[in-house]
Image (cartoon, rainbow, N blue to C red; front, side):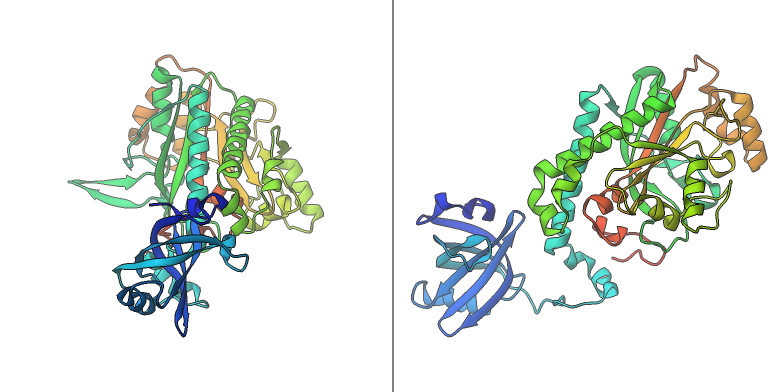
Length: 429
């Protein structure tokens, strides 16, 4: 039994092989059936001629519609008209499962495709995206392993809000209230005192009522924390990691990227260092582009697009005003209005993919910020304890996996970067 990719080879021409998969397209013309078969590795044309297969097999081929699961036996032949330049001339055609009339045809609305997501994930586009996503994850894990980071497993149910407490998903946890995690950061910070450099890949949840092409309520979060790391070195880790992830996808998924109309040559050019642009410079750049922004303005999707749409390499925006960022970031001694932090923005208008910072080690400063926000200090007692027992300079970041997939795969909307997107309007299927 061969995969379709293995069958698409001059080495197989003239040989009798078996393949199995699902019917991607089919049509019949008199005494011949032309079926295109798909599996995870690709598609191949199969011709089934009456008389070349048993009569029952020919009847099977005529009755088997799109998405029927089949096994084909036959001889491989070159045919420039066929997808991939080869076809299988069938001598046997077995049906494992007939398909009813498939409800997805060539032109369908976005809403219907979301309603039928359990079927749409079989599409060639979704298959390609899934394989690229897996390759990006593999590239990240390999980079972390090669650089002596330890993967850990932080909890998903939590009692604190590292980010904005208004965007927490609340859950009933036995006889009390708990929350779905926004980030693993606090737990990762606690682990650096024994493991030095750690990372995790976990789902995160944000109850933001955002209806934009780059927001999900549930997403996969690749996060890192490291002891003895200041903000500039933190950015070096980020640019090396992203480069390794992207280059791994280019090596492993050239065909998938091509099918998504992403030029791999563009991605190959991504190499550190990435430009560092101070927040104040970003404001001035946007003002010149006609944006009504000033000190204290946040960077939304439109602003980030304007900063990056003409770029081919990611960039950092650094040193945001304190009022725009969470309480745990380290104050920037060169400008105490700002933090020692950065956001990495993907090129071509795709915007933020990573947020990171050096972490504050002064408990008094963090207590003051928490009180200003009206937070219960008791909820953060364990986190504040970390600064009492041998604190060290440390930094970390969080990478939104679906956002980097959206950029690398050149997708129009983040919902297509994950099999089952969770948004404000959708929790089905």
